[in-house]
Every structure is written in structure tokens, then in C-alpha cells.
Image 1: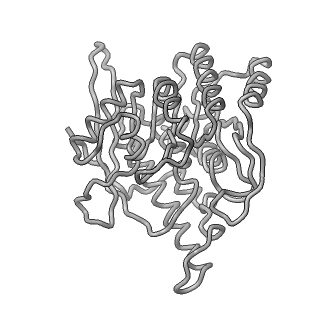
Image 2: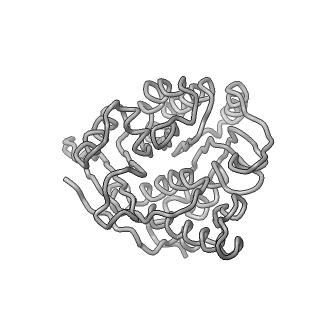
Length: 316
């Protein structure tokens, strides 16, 4: 039997608009299984359908247009089965597609004012953008204002706010600026801030605004130090956003616990993946992209009930 705090998810339905790969784990393939394991119903719209992720030597496939997205959504709406509790989105390369996503989210929120939109605003990393420049204003002016939970990395958080993060205080200010744009929950998934545990760790930060029963606001902020892994994984950002959706659902007023569960799931999946990849590659060889595909099914038990390996500290 599932733990008691997992039972309410059984009634929850997520619309996940992300990429799809035939082989491997990225986008909807990274998000759907873990959410289903945790009791959520997931309806997937595949923004692209590729043979595999683009880190391989070759890939083939199709890209969904904004018009095609609208047609699929229209079919759901005409059957009156467009009642959603969550919308989840990740990597997008096309402005008109992104604008159509915003239209859909706004319409779903009119039908259900309690709908939560979880957005990974994928723009770039380490100082460079890996989506077209014209997506930036769409994210800043249209997407982030309708999002409830966002998961930028440091570069994306800086880009969206126009403020550089050099200290923890800067990071708190950036998260406050992002709150002011719309989202109540902001998690900066990775940063260049120095870790207290040493340079083998990454610093992640989160902030969540709560409204007290009397209407006053309070903000919970957390800091986590996460072990670095010397490998390039694809699909981890999609898994992260899906797990943050799930664990904030189960712990809506406890960001510390939601982040600990989310980061611990990530740790278990990544450790299992890297161990398996090295085993396949053999001694002294770097694992290939197929060998580094996330070991998602094998991590089912850790997704359902992760042993906490990453503890968060509260920051003022």
C-alpha cells in the first residue's frame, strides 16, 4: 500500500507538454513514468517525436507545430475532458508553440483556478543560450507570469531577472524578483555558489511564498548541497520538474521536505545510472550516450519512497 500522504494524488491529472523519444529518457519519457508511479494520471502531448535525444550521433523525427498542438487540445476540450490539476512543460524551441502553451494554460486556469503550472524555463546554461534568442521575451513576459512553480538554473534565473548571482544574498533577491513576476515556488536547480561541503558539491536554492489564513504572506527559503557527477545526463531536468511537482503536491507547505525528496530521487536515479554505465563501458572508458540513459524503471522503488540523502537547510 502507498503511504497515506500519496493517496490524494490518485485523483490528480497532469497535462505534460514535452518532447518524446522512441529510445531512452527525455521530456515526457522522463516525466510520465515517475509521476504515474506516484499516483498521478498523466496526459502527454509530444512537442517533438524523435528517435532518440540529440546527444547521439544521429537522430530523426518530427516537430509538432503550434497549430497541431491546438488541434490536439481542441479534441480534448470538445470531449469535455480538459479538467487538469497540473500542467508541466520543459524544453521548447519555437515561439508560436510556447505562446500556444500559454493560451492553453490560461484557458485551463479559467476552468480550474487551482490549477498549478510547473515550468522548467529552458533557455541555456553556463553563460550561453541553447534556444533561439526570441524565446527569451516570451518566457519573461508571458510564460513566467502564468507559472506557479519554476525550476531555472542560475543562468536562466539571472537572464529572467537581469540580476547576477554572486552570493547567497543575491540568490535570495533573484528568487524574490521571480516571485514578483508570478510564481509562488522557485527552485534554482544549480548554481556556481561555493558549497560548504567542498568543490565536489553544487549549491541549489529554493523559495516558496505562503499565504497565511489571515492573508499575510510568509516565505520559506532553503539551500541544498548536491554531489556533482562527472557525466552528462539528458532528461534529468525533466525528471526534476516532474518530481518537484509530485513532492510539492504531497508537501504543499513544506518546501524543505519537497526539495529533499526531489533531490534524493535525482541522486538515486543518477547513481544507479552512472554505476550501470561504467559497468557497460568497461574500465577506463567514458560511457556513451546510450549507456547513460537514465535507469528509470530500475529506480521505481526509489521514486516511490526515496531514502533522504540530501538535506536542506533553511535560510533567512
